[in-house]
Length: 137
Image 1: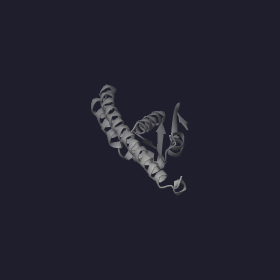
Image 2: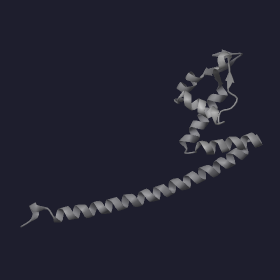
Image 3: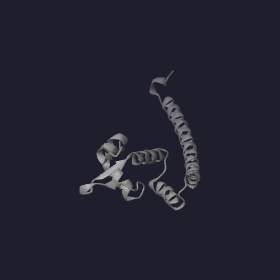
Image 4: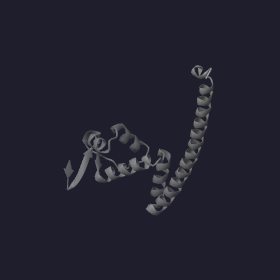
């Protein structure tokens, strides 16, 4: 829908474009990740291109592993300082923390894989030693 040269989206249209549920969009609004949503008569929400871009950014941050509380923290920083510089600095810190956690998980999974393969070899050796078809050969 267009009004005054500006495109507006109904919540269902926005949800479809973003492949997320209308409930998720409303929840992001409730917790303050999506601000300044406009309402028309009857209280129906309408969303702008800016809202669409904001939700794409939220979706990307979620894909990168940021939690909703971390995203809310970034929003709070922006509301106080009104500059992306502080937000981006904190985002780098958060991402570095997530990379460190991923590295730790990779190390743990590598050790687990090694343990499983070692145990598997022991089981195979035991099965071969107990193979009745090899008795008397």
